Length: 154
Image 1 (cartoon, rainbow, N blue to C red):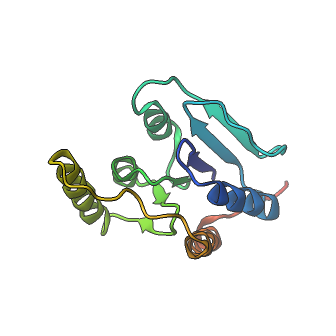
Image 2 (cartoon, rainbow, N blue to C red):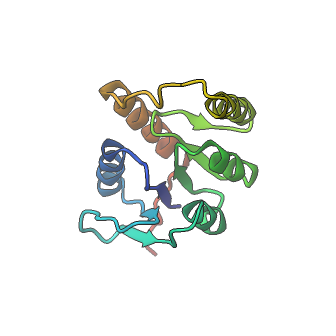
């Protein structure tokens, strides 16, 4: 089990929460981005820089993540691809994308994109608040409690 982070636009508080949980519980973390990243020193945290092309990080995540892993992303189309492969995806505000809710999230995203294309301002994403960080931390803890089983030493 590994936690992957779509790190290009991931809020710093989310990464900090993941790093703390990794130290506490012991799961590996991989940050994927198309720009250089820094991460705290640690055996279980690695960074991967992909090419600068459109959706390169998304393609990398889809190719390398496996069922049992968790991907942290705000990218709804990426989450839809992962959910279709049986891979868990969690957004930075604490919502777990599932086969039950992903179609609705895609439809809403497509509607907002259509409105922006038509010149209707949407105001951009909501600011990231402490309540969002708290919701993410709670969702991450719940997911880990249900899914993470550390490898036992022989």
